[in-house]
Every structure is written in C-alpha cells, then in structure tokens.
Image (cartoon, rainbow, N blue to C red; front, side, top):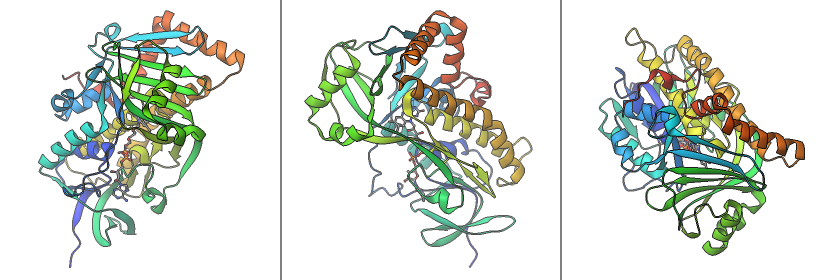
Length: 401
Ligand SMILES: Cc1cc2nc3c(=O)[nH]c(=O)nc-3n(C[C@H](O)[C@H](O)[C@H](O)COP(=O)(O)OP(=O)(O)OC[C@H]3O[C@@H](n4cnc5c(N)ncnc54)[C@H](O)[C@@H]3O)c2cc1C
C-alpha cells in the first residue's frame, strides 16, 4: 500500500501551528495539520491566558482574512504605561504618536484559537488530522516518513509547532537549551472599579513584573510574575487573598479589584533550539523558543517566523520543494537577527528589573525616564515591540484594517 503524501505536515495546531496553516491556505500543494485537538467530542483544554497582539501581527491576521472575526473579541491598547514600583521612573507609549488607532490588541487565547480553527476548517487544501506526530521513521531524498499514531505518512516538509511541553523536537534530534527564570506567571482576568479604557499597564515590582491588559468591559487580563516557590500558594488561595496580593503589587490606579476569574500558572524559562531547521524539518513557535512574557513578544515573534516561512514557501517561481535545504537555510538566515534581538531585549528587561542593586535600580529608572523624555528612543522601542522593527517581515505587509 502506498503511503499518503503531503507536501507540508504541521505537527501541532495551537496558535502558532494554526496560524502557519492558515498562511498556507492558498499554497498550491497539500497541507496537513496534526493535533489531538480536532475531535469535536473532545474539546481542547481551555487556555485561560490572553495575548497582546501587536500591530505587525494584526496586519498578518488582516491579510489572512481573520481580523474582522478577531476584532469582535479584541480590546485595543491605545497607550501603555510602564512603571517601577516604589521608584521614580515611568514611561508612556501612545498609539497617536505613530498615527495608529492602537498599539496592539488583547484577545483571549481561546477566542483566538476558535477563530483560527473555524478559518482552517473552511480552507480547502488543509487536512486536519486528530492524532499526534510520534517520530520520523526515515528520511529519504524527497520526503520524510512521519509516524502519526503508529501509521506512516510521507511529508516533504515537517513543521514542528508542538509547543514547549512536547518532546517531539528532541525525538527528532533538534535539541534545546533551557535557562529557568525561577519565576512563574499567574494569569487570570479581573474586574476593577475604575477602568481606564485602552490603557495597558506594566508595573515592575520586586517580585517580578505585573501586567494588566485591557479586555472588553471593565475587565483586565492579569499576568502576575512571582517566585516559582509562590506559584502553588497563589493558585490555590481564595479569590479575596489573591486580589489583596495583586492590589498590593499593582496599586490603586484602576481602583479596587473586585473579582477574578479562573487562575492558571506557567513556569517561566528561556528556551532556545540550537538549530531551527534540519533535514526537511523546521521548528516554529514555542517548539523553537520560549520567552519570558514580560514584553508580550513570544507569539508575536513566532508570527513573524510564520510570515517569513509562508512567504518563502509560496515562493516567487511557483511550486518548489517545500523541504529544500536552500529554502530552509534562507528562512533561518532571514529570521536570525530579529529572533536574537527580541530574545535579548526580553531577557534584558527581566534581568534589569529583577535586580535590587542600587546602581542598577537607578540606571533602569533613568532608562524609563529617558524613554519618556527622548522621543527617538521611545520610537525605537515602540516600533520593535509593535513588530515593525528592522528585519520584521510585517514591515512588508500593508496596514489593512
Ligand atoms: C503567561 C503568558 C503570557 C503570554 N502573553 C503573551 C502576549 O501577550 N503576547 C505574545 O506575543 N506572547 C505571549 N505569550 C507567549 C505565547 O503564549 C506563546 O508564544 C504561544 O502560546 C505559543 O504557541 P504554540 O502554538 O507554539 O504552542 P502551544 O500553544 O503549546 O501549542 C502546541 C500544540 O501542539 C500540540 N502538540 C504537542 N505535541 C504534539 C505532537 N507530538 N503531535 C501533534 N501535536 C502536538 C498540542 O496539543 C498543542 O495544541 C505568553 C506566554 C505566557 C506563558
């Protein structure tokens, strides 16, 4: 019996794998997305997180035709207020300085996954397979034999978007290094008594950064970073105790926190695959790297990889071998600088704001003041975090609304 052949198999249909598949909806070859989330009778576990989608990512989703659906659930960020608890430094970034209606938008992850899932189900060249990719059995000159729930399947390119927790990348011989931050992010949604429409807050505290991102209504998405050792206590304590703790860390800018939704917690580490591409394989999203959520960059960076990879696969000269070494090497090379700089900027923020030594405290507060008072510095930072910095494939996308 001949094995079923797909041009591209995407292992993992999470936010990144689904986005890549959607970016290939007009690809002239065949595409399969494999994940155990496609059976209607077994819904995927609820992700209680929210994601701040920057302007570059919004443009990508607009180009993929899903922005009108996402906008229904998205809350715009008109300004971002950054402060250092107990110190003088503060900075503010405003959308109007960049002639934009918003710096970014906040969407609940389950909504994002839902919109992407509906668009994928409607795409004619994409096959959704409710299974798991287990391994690669053999690698021929033209294709890989991929083991999917024990059965072989041929793929000319295997894109691994299996997240950070999966072990698939390691099984394929694509190793990662990991540096734990010894911190966990506790996430939930809260209701406040004095919402300030469209303003997002990033407050650095001694325990770690606390982000409040506006949602629709008087709700905010919270990402509260704490020492890993406090993770379980903050997950398990009664709502009132949690809200008191949050109020203490964040202060009273939004009035009183009066209620919160389900809580979730994520251990934080910086992981980095030593090679993002290998023979007919590419890692994408959390399978390639994980970042601290301090600047909301992980998914946005992954989408820039998606845009670049999909652009190369579509090619300028019609159908080509999607697993060709030259194509994969070109992808890795084009993405190298943006990936390196985004990881470095995120890690620098964690280290600088996690440091209690007086010279560092003074330096970082001067840095915040400088960002507030020196427009070119502020603009450089804003364009990077909006996903429109140098090397970003989103710069090539228009501002379609
Ligand atoms: C607290 C927190 C807040 C964040 N906030 C932001 C933010 O505001 N902005 C931002 O840009 N980023 C943010 N991020 C980062 C963002 O959440 C990640 O970049 C994103 O979730 C990565 O998605 P993914 O699809 O790569 O992985 P996942 O979401 O982990 O998806 C992986 C998928 O692969 C499937 N899978 C696993 N193994 C296999 C297999 N063997 N075969 C087939 N399928 C498999 C799983 O079932 C799953 O569906 C945040 C992260 C955290 C922790």
